[in-house]
Image (cartoon, rainbow, N blue to C red):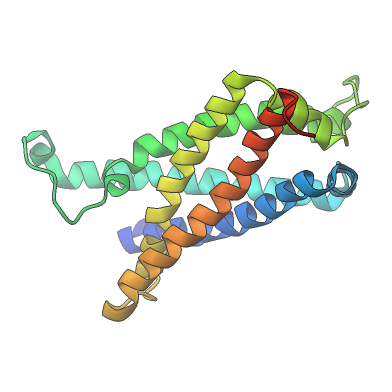
Length: 225
């Protein structure tokens, strides 16, 4: 199948899974902002997206997208390194028109994966997993505000999450326009437009996430709330 065996096919898979994950991030960011507006409303959403069959199915689908995206990222990286051969060891100047994020997508991906593991441990494990695994404490399983407050009252977690969000921002600003280019939706006119759209969109989404982290930390200091 050309999607799996050809370089273009692999890039298409990377693009489609990447865009699907961006849609998830958009939903997740909108959901998180609710926590800043009304804690009870946020907990209602958490309860609705608890261990229900549709939430579990969506989580499995999301996990599959993440795995496919990561696997193909490593495949394409290995493929590109092999194509360069010995040239990859030559000392050369960085191309002026190549973005920093483009040159460091693998490193950014590793940081994002580590942040994802931390995030799953702090939230998914204590919420959905708590309801699915027999014997786990389910008292706060649907109390998302409890876990947000507890996690972001710790300055270490605050710093780690902000670093993670910065890595995602760099990844998205490159990934969005790159995906559009791969799928043939970026010509001469739209190339720079997609880059600008990607930067604005990524900034808005990451600021929504960062706002929750920063505001909840400030609240934990007794400055507000």
